[in-house]
Image (cartoon, rainbow, N blue to C red; front, side, top):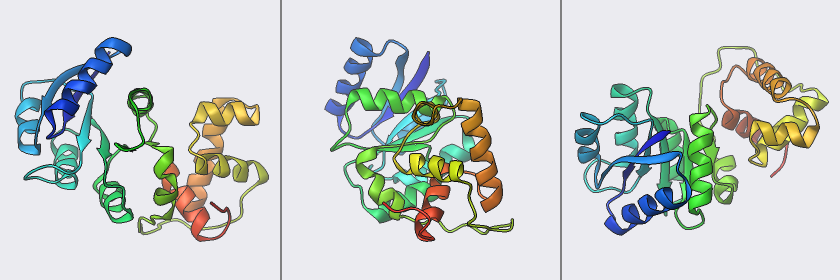
Length: 214
């Protein structure tokens, strides 16, 4: 069972999500709700949660500030951001704050939301495909401590292209006809080559260097 706290200042939106989870996704339970960041931390003081579904446009404490505080005080709780504001600046700010995923309110639906929650709880990142072109255009600056090379094998390029398309490990494995373990091994080697540790940064680097195209 995945325990979720919904943080959104629109009561009808919270009610709608709760109804959708109860009706269609019995493995996801709403453990609490809040209409602002301050209320969220009051709820967390007495409620166990696996993931916070966080609207980033909140009264008072903003989404990035809430995210940073969550990571500090509740590092095991995952964060899935939701917003109708999908600008490069907003996405960049939330990525730097440390979210595990981002979905657009305008394009997303309850099925994608449930899939995102499950994926994040399995250890993956999740970004709605409708905003992928914006995400790929965001370059999160990070000091590289390892030697950087743009020399990738053919298989590594295939995996990077699949990541660009927003595919999860199992989907990449199905596309390429190899095992998930093999995909994870290739990804680890790519991370080591670049001195980074997330799929998003791999895609951003490959796009910036012209190794792949949108």
